[in-house]
Length: 226
Image 1: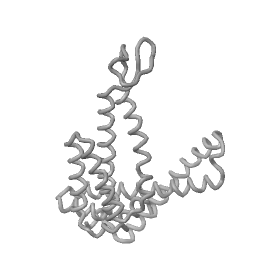
Image 2: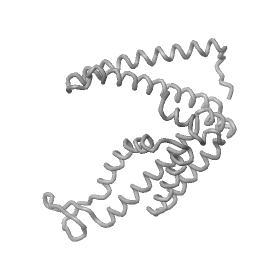
Image 3: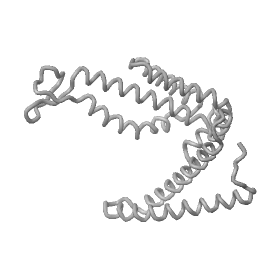
Image 4: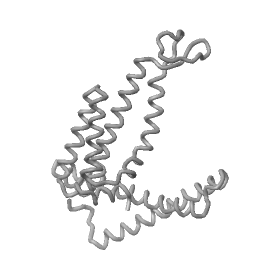
C-alpha cells in the first residue's frame, strides 16, 4: 500500500469527519498566507506537526523524511531571494567581489528569505496534515456533500488510484533493481532506468486491466456510489 495512503487510513484521527480535518488544514493555510510574520508561521508549523505526529500518531522519522524533497526546492529558492548583486558592497551585510560588482546578502534579502522559508514550511505542514489524516473515501464523501460534480469526484478517485498503482509498482521494481546492483555505475544506471521505464508501463497497464476486470465483476456501470 502506498505509504501516504496507509498513514491516512490507519492514523488515530482517521475516524473524525473529513470536514473537521480539512477545515483545520485550510484554516492554517489561510493564516500562513494572510500573515507576514515568521513567528506566526513557526507557530502554525509546530501546531500542525503536533497534530500530525502527536494526535494522529504518525511516526516522527517518516514524517520528517517527507520534508526532504520540498526542502531542496525551498533551499534553491532561498538562495535566489537572499542573494543580491550590487555595484558597491556598502548595502550588503556580507559581500564577495564578482566581475565589476559584488554579490552577497542584504538585510532585506535575508528578511524575505526568512519569510519565504517559514511560510513554505508551515504551508507544507498544513497540507501534510490534511493528506496524512484524511483517507480518500472521506475526500469523496466530503466532495459529494459539497455538491461538487460527480464526474470531478470520480475522476479524482481514479487518478488517485492510478497514482497509487504507479507508486507501488515503481517502488517494487526499484527495490528489485537495487538487489541486482542496478545502480553500481553510471552506465548500468542508464540501462536500468531504461528497462525500469519499459517494465513500469507494462506493469501499470496490467494492473489497470486487473482493476477493470474487478469492476466488471462487481457490475460497474460507469458510476461510483459515493
